Length: 391
Image (cartoon, rainbow, N blue to C red; front, top):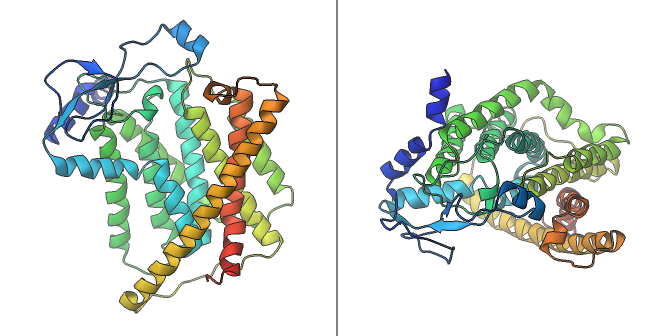
């Protein structure tokens, strides 16, 4: 078993997968800073070179110096397929898919998806900073992403999020929508598989990282499934629910495991937990003030799909555009206000990126900002839709 685990963690296994998919390191050994490469000769970080000693990294709380390895693409089909699949596991997908689901498909389904996603992502992010397993070595692996280079590898939170969203959606729609189970299962498997394989193709995770993420998520879904009905009733819980929903996640964020140097994991975790808290509070507000109706027990089959699809698409895009604009406005206003208050409170003189990364600044401002975003998305955006006559 130990030998199997070591082989699954081997960077050479990832490199062989990349070569089979037509991704190769450039012949020349030179490394340079990222200056914006094209797909055939692009940007992927190589670790180690130019990094300061561990003590210096801790003192400066800075991300290790990033260097870029040239690479060559010989199969553009796999290149664009896996780059697109990687995007399906990133924040840009979830901040579009989950609100779109809430505003256009089923708000009660979106709440379940968001809460399971928050739980899975928190456990995955914390596990990374506790285990501190490195990402695949480069060389031999070609790395195509830059932002998460400072994070650890095990487990793959992209794989965890994709598996959680895909199979929570599959299970949750079984008793609410009537469409073939095989189709649902195929969609879930294809979505999660593409995201998982993209983590190998981009050189950001070992096979063991990806399998670990999938297995942890599967275990969490099995363990939490009996409580999913309770999740659906959170909005009718005690009036003290909003207090608990704010205090517990904020405590978890403020006491996040300390890393050897600054990485975006604490900020990302705060954003995720705050958004989940905001969504939960938003649903509680809707129920407490009777701003939303109860979910239907069973939804009928849509018969006239072609005729209905065009109208639904236009309406959906319109509601999404209106909602995103309001969310972006609220996010910017709350972020600026919270930063100004925190800078003044802690008497911060130099107000730059380093100041934002301080624990007492980063966690509160991100938590307040994205809790507000979650409340806005679930309460004020639907109110604006109704005001504008968008059903």
